[in-house]
Image (cartoon, rainbow, N blue to C red; front, side, top):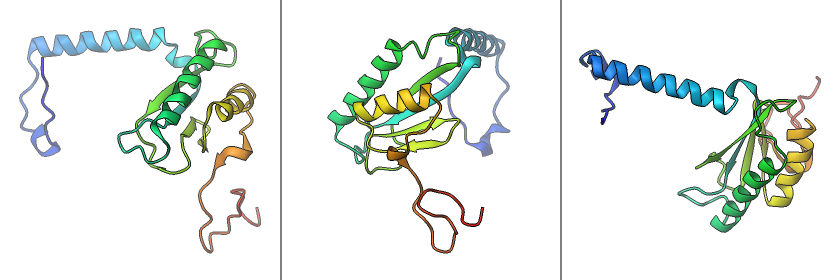
Length: 163
């Protein structure tokens, strides 16, 4: 069944769902809830987003992005980091089309830590996996930090002066 995406202005005018549509939505929600349980959604401790295979392909060569993504998938599986019931929580991975950095890629983001990484080759990803995802310590050498802004009182390490 195709669903249209009404604009916010038209939502108020949209007809109420039919019984069949409501039943379909309820069934879809149940399937989504079971899928979340199957992947251990409540036990996810960290999530790594990797950008390197985008439509724009500006942050790195496509072959570099593909190699990084293949390595990340393989290594997380080898180490059992995505296994439900893992002590320390599950690590999830997502191939992001674009994280809007578009330079020095592949780019990775670790959530909920809000830590960004640049130049994520397989060797760098191995460091990130071992030191950050397993050890809990960000890899300073490959961290991507915002450029200092004039008068913001932030040094190159990201620390606020006077703190």
